[in-house]
Amino acid sequence: MSEFLLEVKNLKKYFDTPKGKLHAVDDVSFSIKEGKTLGLVGESGCGKSTAGRVILRLLEATNGEIFYKGKNIRELKKNKMRELRKEMQIIFQDPFSSLDPRMTVSEIIEEPIKLNKIINDKEKRFERVLELMDLVGLSRRLMNTYPHELDGGRRQRIGIARALSLDTKFIVCDEPVSALDVSIQAQILNLMKELQQKLGLTYIFITHDLSVVNHFSDDIAVMYLGKLIEKAPAEELFSNPIHPYTKALLSAIPRPTLDRKVDKIILKGEITSPINPKDNCRFANRCNYVQDICKQTEPEFKEISPGHFSACHVFSDHLSGEFE
Ligand SMILES: Nc1ncnc2c1ncn2[C@@H]1O[C@H](COP(=O)(O)OP(=O)(O)OP(=O)(O)O)[C@@H](O)[C@H]1O
Ligand code: SF4
Ligand SMILES: [Mg+2]
Image (cartoon, rainbow, N blue to C red; front, side, top):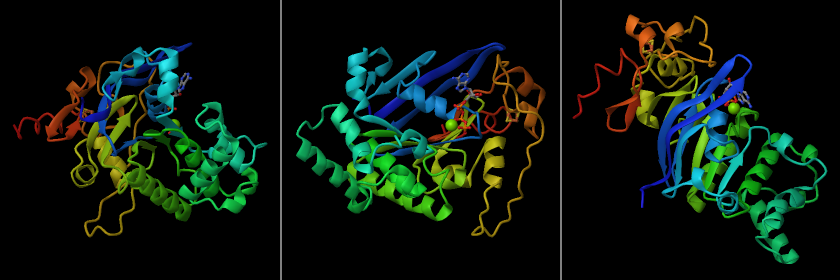
């Protein structure tokens, strides 16, 4: 049995567009141990949500393998996949759009339990709904209210309760706090951390904001135009970033605790199109360190020190091999 709950190998998702193939996720590989969090970061349009949806098979991959508990789930038939969905869930950025406005809080949380025939007895099902409301810190007096009567934090708690209502082990959290006020963000992040410890959950935590995943993730993977460009344990990524794009992302975070002043790196140049991209470094147009080789060949995503991977001709190539 693999030591990983999830292993993604050479995952690709291309969309057909009138202008050609859009490489939303392009040869991405990573793995996550049970009970751990992988933060998946990168700017808008880099393919984070597509990767999350493809892993859950809400979208079919173009190519690659997705191993969950050692089984390639891309080979599973519909009914087996339906069974597995009880373990694999998603939480969205805007819970409002995913919550039926005509249903009350308790009906919304009850729905997946009813549809999946987890608990058939009505009273017992109601007990479970109350238990879930307690678990996510939603007061029981809110059970007959409607989503529009609640604030964003409480709505996200409903989204989390729904995601936990089945036999949940793994959750793709797609920007779950991005739409919330900063003070509420912290409450929801704390709740998610608590639930992870209590229930042994495994998360992929998607965000465009590196500062959100700093204390939350075990590992952080940085995406750029469909590619993973760096991945490392969270602390290592923050203290020793290798890739120029990661450095630029980090420089944009205000960090008052650091005595060393980090100048914000402003990225210039046009973003490369994800449609029919060339086999070169996709960051080359915006990189301050670009060399001829960067425009000709794609840098390999390789391990530079134990657990620290990066794809850069200039900064990874001369470092790799040192720890062997
Ligand atoms: N159904 C689709 N058809 C065509 N292109 C798509 C489709 N879904 C996503 N894309 C494209 O795939 C790329 C990746 O999109 P995706 O939504 O995964 O990015 P993201 O990193 O989640 O961005 P954001 O931070 O804005 O949510 C984008 O160029 C997007 O336009
Ligand atoms: S491979 Fe070249 S262009 Fe790409 S990030 Fe590294 S230095 Fe910059
Ligand atoms: Mg997204």
